[in-house]
Image (cartoon, rainbow, N blue to C red):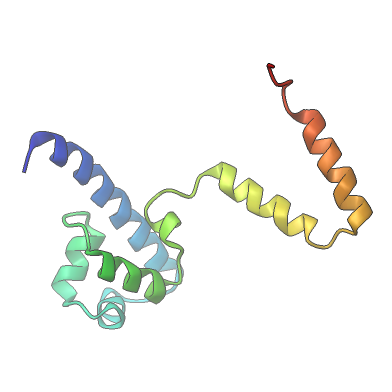
Length: 116
C-alpha cells in the first residue's frame, strides 16, 4: 500500500471508528451485540470501532442498519449545512402554498447577485 493511500485511509477509518463507537453508545448496545447484528466476528468489529480497519461496503451497510445511522453520518459526510437544510425542509413541509412562495422569495433575496 502506498504512503498516499495510508494517509487517506487511516484518517477515514479512524473517523468511521469514532462514529461507529458513538452510534453504538447512543444505541446502548455492546460490541458483541453489534458484531452479531452485522454478522462479523467480535474481533473484526473491534478493529473497525478502533479505526484499525475499514469495513467492506456490505459490512458498512450492515453497520448502518444495525446502528440505525445514515451512511453519510457514519462516513463523516453529514455537514452542518446538510443538517441546517434538513431543519429548513422539515419546517417548510407544513407551510401553505402562499407561505412557500414567500419563503422562496425571501431565500432568493438572501442570495448574492449573479454576475451576468
